[in-house]
Amino acid sequence: MKPKLAWSKLLTTLSFVMIALSVLAFGRIRVQAATAPTGLRQTQASSSSVTVAWNAVFGGSNKVWTKISDNASMSPCTFDYTYNTSDYFYGLNPGQTYYVQIGMSDTSKLSSTPPEDTVWSAPIPVVTAPDSVPSETIKFTKATTNSLTFTWQAAAGATSYNVSYHLSTASSDTSSVVSTETNSITISGLQSDTEYDINIAPVRTEPSTGFAATDNSTSKWNYPTLPKNVSGMEVTAFSVNGSLHFEWNKCKVADGYEAEVYTYNGKKPLIKQSVTSSYLYLTNKKLKTAQIYKFRVRAYVTNADNNKSYSSWSSYQYTSRILDKATVKKSGSKLKVSWKKVKGASSYTVYMATDSSTHTYKKMGNTNKTSLLLKKNIKKGKHYYIRIIPNYKKGKKSYPGYTDKSSYTVHVWYSASGKLYV
Image (cartoon, rainbow, N blue to C red; front, side):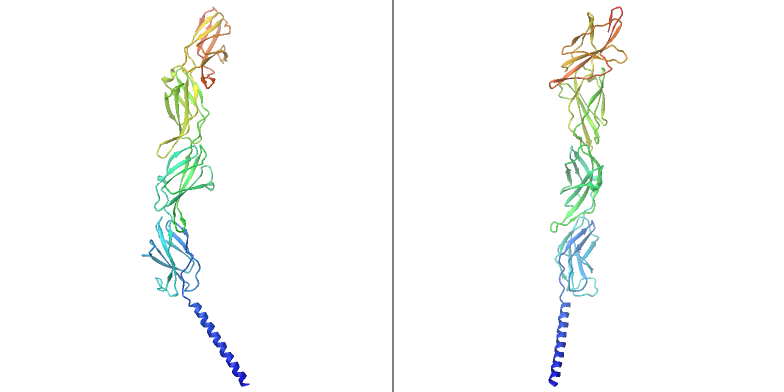
């Protein structure tokens, strides 16, 4: 039995040795030296703060030390500690680059600075967002039918700008975004004769990490693109005293219009005038001349410096005042009318009415001369109202310069005694 007991004691001794070795091995794991955190990355930014995260670290104490500096040498720097896998640094300046390091130590006792055995990661650059662009510095400099151009005061520390835009009548959720590395931009591909809202956000990007910090933005509203051109022009009155009234279709967002009036073959405008309405009254001695005139209109929008961006000119519209003088003579039982030549006129159309209240005119003929025998027998005791309209040529077709349903050139009364009064 003794040998068996000896063998049992030997087994017991070996068990204690194995336990001791296990304890020693376990203790060795616990006291393994701390290692520097890995996976450092910036996750958030404002104009005065940054947030940095890292991978979880096993070993060392539970406390993770952090430091931040405005230079890569990390001197001087500010220390902090955390028990998490991220840290928030605040009280920073906008539009700046800072550097962050994360360290681990085997020492767990309380202290205000990292222990000497702290193992630090390599520093990584982090960026804060720039301050916003001052609203009053955003200048609308140019408009076309499909684009808007802006400039603004550069934001300190910005490396680029995100500019979002959307129709003023739509939600900001419909915004599109374009970027620029300068403090100006032309936004293209817009709708004509339409207003847009814009939002400018300065960005600071750290090139080595690609992190873009943006926090503050500035919005402005109701910037108009130009209409393609003015349409719907027509003359509503052109009296014999030279008073001309014409109008056109109103553009949705135009600040005003510029109109020019020329003679039929004129190269320089006789009259050039700006208005904010979609019509124009002109009373000018230059318009009293019996001739064909042409006019055109373009719209404009006004930029921040009170300079104007113009649409294309409309096509020319032509007009002439009705002739106010004519010579009428009796030729047998008919009337012969003659008048002075109108500059620019390619032909003339003569109308006549006998109704003094409605002046229902009938066309009596067309001629390229300055006289016409009216092929209608006149009757004693009757009144005749004669109207002479100059025509102009546009391409191969002729058009009336102006037709006023109530005006007439000359009034003739053929008395019962057979005398003609003009």
